[in-house]
Image 1 (cartoon, helix red, strand yellow):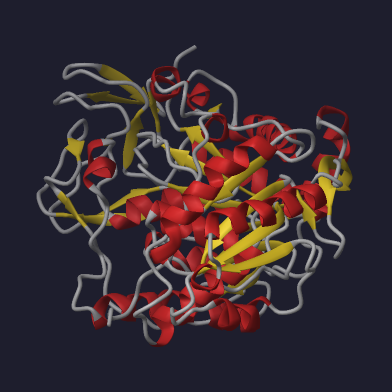
Image 2 (tube, rainbow, N blue to C red):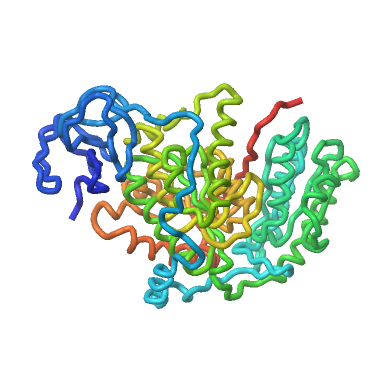
Length: 510
């Protein structure tokens, strides 16, 4: 039966329309008769109680903003009468209220024990074991320019390289970007870190690093960031030193293809799996359907010994204390405080408003304030303890849930997740997008209309929860789906041949 609305938490002073509702509709909300005073679009909120101007509106059991006008039961609550209640840079106190500690997610372990027969391959996926012991879920050749000046050369080599694809070699991809020169300080440092991280990513069975020869982040400089490497797996080409860079590039790709073709899928324990958690183009249903489903998946994977990474720091503002309270120890708490406040300093140092969010698309979908957005966004992290906090460009080492410093921008944050070591990314959305990260990007729709309309974009429908079922049930299905993707099933963006990357630009350009 199609549910028309949802009161997410018993303490909420608003409910969310799961379908478009009309003025005059009479609703029974927990035994209280509510008559809607105006049309309520899907994903939008309506008041359950009378509240004066200045009162805090509660959703998800937490405040999401302050009323600028009084409301009565049945009134639409949105940007016209609700504003953010967030302050500027804040101080926080370590509480560890939930008592998280090593092994505290054993309850999810019991769930996995009970459901192991329902999960594809038990607790395994079919991956590629690399010579250095790392595991990849794709067997590709990546062409990585050190500088934007040779991006067109990289694309030309990508086109030539398609003739090599076949057998266990699954793709040849070039990742263009405009950076690598005329950068200073941290700005240049970030470019080098991200490029080095991608060179070392195990989804790439082979890598061709393509330099120009006169850039700041040259091949020789980048080698220092890459560290020890296998000469069979990583090749370098400096275009200014080659008489015909395309011919030389083709020769190197052929050598890489011969090496990469020697890898084949084998059973790998899902303890080795790393999954990035990301949302974009969210709507009012994202925090009810797609994000809680991903949260269940995250708890399942981390309970099984795997790893998830949550990012988009500006979209944690307003829900950050919920994450801080889940930090496994005081050191991680202080790292999370720095994660939040450093990003606020980034905004203020550029004379920008900290809370310039949500986006126009978010508002159209029913999200009114940043608190509203953040409380829905952070549900992707589930309920398990925070066991790692990563700087931008840092690679994940701690198994379990990690927090990663990166902005909300879809391309930048997804690239950061890949650079941190994510094998694939779960991307929840209420609006839809065709983009792809350097790693497989699973698109999960928060509403079924999007899933039906954009079949060439969307991979998994979470909108079915408006008709019944629970995030717990759907999250277990998603666990199964993710293992199939890790085992080689292509997502829609891969089938379309899409792959993108973007580096976080922070400094001046010379």
